Image (tube, rainbow, N blue to C red):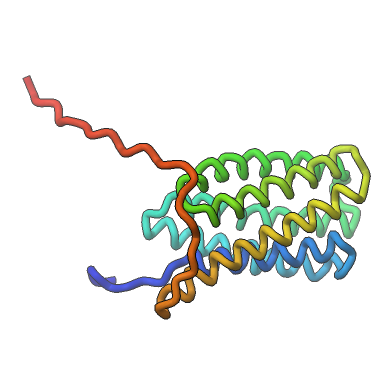
Length: 201
């Protein structure tokens, strides 16, 4: 690729896959569709598409985008594997096991939420609703057993998915001269410290 050549923004596909897979899973959690269709979407749209987007973000030097899309791409692929095991009774996976799986990604999401505060209000809102949705699912799978937590989590995550798609539209429409507002960062990032070269004695 020659210097100065314009490249596409991988976030468009990454956000599309994240939002689409999240939305479909919540439809299943609310009983509107079956788990089988979620498995297929999780592997290819939520998983593979985000993983590719993450690797492309790596090439652009965007460490946050690389980490986020690669992480959640792997999450969706792993979740697809878990659902396949649950549907077929393989490996003896329990609801509590799924809960601990969710906890791992809840912690990662909290870390990304901190970073999102320094990017834009839209990023912060998306990661906040994602974290909140994870927490509701953590509680559901780790012992509450109350479907209320699952349903409330599903509603919160539908909002999260729509927010991700809003950011996706921001990326897509920007090239067409339409700029959807994302809002200013909630936290101002500290400037990188200036270092002086150490002179040889």
